[in-house]
Length: 332
Length: 299
Image (cartoon, rainbow over all chains, first blue to last red; front, side, top):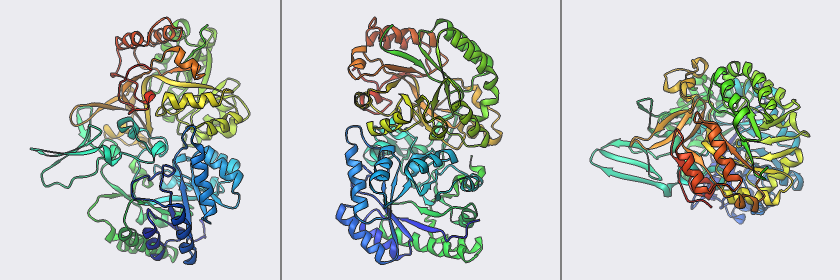
């Protein structure tokens, strides 16, 4: 069991969210540039070069770190865009670059030895051999773990590697191995790996029909809601489908991840850092979630029990259904 | 011999050892493909069923003049699965790496990267080539133009395009066959064996959309990218990959052989494919930088 204090890594989609996360107690914030080099490429989100430099100053003044995600895969003939993003992140004084593409990792390892490299979840590294390869080739210091591993698997993995591990504890739940899922591009032409988006909003339609509302993505019916029922976002893997004569949420129910109750288990499994997802969320949300997790992590570090943690996080449910996902082995 | 070589990719589905033996016997004798990939790629739990078949399959294919490539698991997790990847990577034959896990034990020796390894640009391709990659089959979502641009910049390796078969779209830690049948992955009862082309998944409006195969999700539709050989040659692309389905794969190989030799037009090849007993309609959107499910004209 590790005795190091776990780091709380929080989302910053905008400079305002960065300040909110830092003030709410984030040990580190992660953010990206306002272009296709990061996996949350939405209009109105992310940072300019200047905003990042300002964000780094603010975070450092308050004792927090800044991690910059350059974690999409570089486009043929345009690899320089990704390399320049990495150069800008290094120049801003940020504490780490989070990357997945061999080309980006190689560029940073060779040209910016002073900045830490974290392996993005998009690299889908989940074995000691794969993580060891990235460590030997690029000197990665931390790996962000796929959201499909159980606690037991994480514990075994941590024992077998000598880089830090970061695990998602709150927010979206990817049920497919990240970085290896092309469902979105199959339906819409836009994908996380190539475009930094999954099930993009411009391809979504909500059609009012006599029986209720039908949610479609690129013309494919993803879910249907009766009148008065809350309407969800048609993310492909959380949709309702027919197979074997049965209609069900075949891949995953429309749930989000909340592993708040598993913080002590993740610590025991050797996890170094806990990641909150949600760079597309506003500063109010970020502030509230980070504050709750700050208390929960501190309670675990002080030896607090699970009941206290659940109570601390109770306010975060917001009516949405939640799950501890793959951390519980029964999920599979 | 044509300049465009044909590769038969690994079988993604849970076929019995007898079925595998029968299938590869015909491939060895009749299919005009130069290279054949063998091995379990999707689920390590199936390996005890197929492993006994491989020595005979490999011997038969090699006696039939095919180059055999050993394909490794796309998402190894258990100690046994990781050891199997390491063992295969030590083999003298060509190996297909489907997860970065295989790279440490294969670096310095020749290998193929399969469509589960993310090679999206020329710099990443060069990195892998320097480790020993001789053939690169990029992820299925990349367009022909993008693969062609990579190929032009990396003439020291062969680039291969996923030309035929249900498209491999995603892998999970969760088994969807088990979930559909109300089972847990650890006691899955191998229900995936009932669906030798994968199990179709339709939308609520009965649109055919996806297919599941254990932990894997595929397209319901069948990729049928039928480029003219000149188009391939101009980009230096020298291989087309055909992914096994239960339809007559010898006939599929013959159609692509005629296409690659310039003895059949793209449209005629696509028509001939459409006449086979396929699990879905023909698509080629990805090749044309469009959503993968779309069907477009030949390049």
